[in-house]
Image 1 (cartoon, one colour):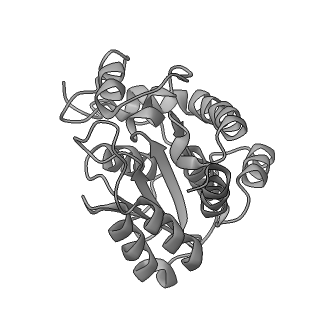
Image 2: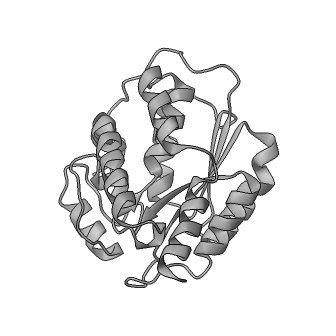
Length: 235
């Protein structure tokens, strides 16, 4: 089935003037469809929302975001906890990437185990342990035509509010039980980035956006959580 085959429902030009964001991602396919879908939905040029898919490890992603940071108002690094094709194994550079992002003021949108969890949350709250393969298997059974070639953004985007609420609920639950981010499976902070994008485009309620940003805290929150987790677990 062709991707994005139906016309998008456009929003009026309500985007915040001149605010720009660069999103550097580990993935080059699923993430591209999603974030470029948002950009096209709100008719924003790549100068406003620039997606860069590297197909690289988290540390490389953070370094690239750091290089581009001075050219944008916001710089985000998007990556997974698990290495692609490695069941239950996290990226060797994960902790170094989080620490570097924390020092550089780069915001991170991280998914454990993978970005597909964020897609699943558009349709349902999932709290049980996931692997890359299991997440993709669940995604294939959901009504947005997910497969190895991509998915239909138009069938997913109408459920963005459900995804934001599910991700926030999952985040709160996992933070209570697991101080260390790497122990939170499943977990994602992609909703923080999407909230930022909706605020930039004018697609988010200002009150809800402010509350989400208050929950998110500073750019160093992930790094701080990681440090607390190491102290908590003795690592």
